[in-house]
Length: 101
Image (cartoon, rainbow, N blue to C red):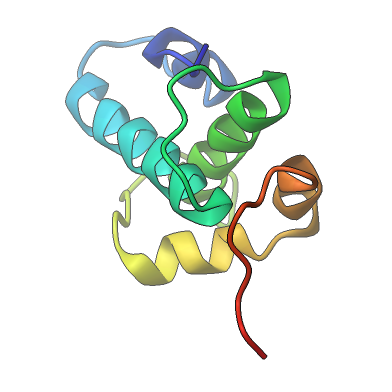
């Protein structure tokens, strides 16, 4: 099962509902990015892909100083976070499409 808003809020230590709309968009974008990165739509992810989406959402949703602030829902933010070794390890063995060198 894909991560839910409550999981993301817990990871980011958000205890108010004021950020729910932004955080849900962030989580939806992270799930979409995982699907793009593995090369197919995934309805029922395994634990590794679900954790990859959560890891990506936390990376993009956290400022460099660790605070929650402006969410950059753009390709640059996701591209940078998607290059992290932790995220790449979670995708290992799931790719059905590979880049051409």
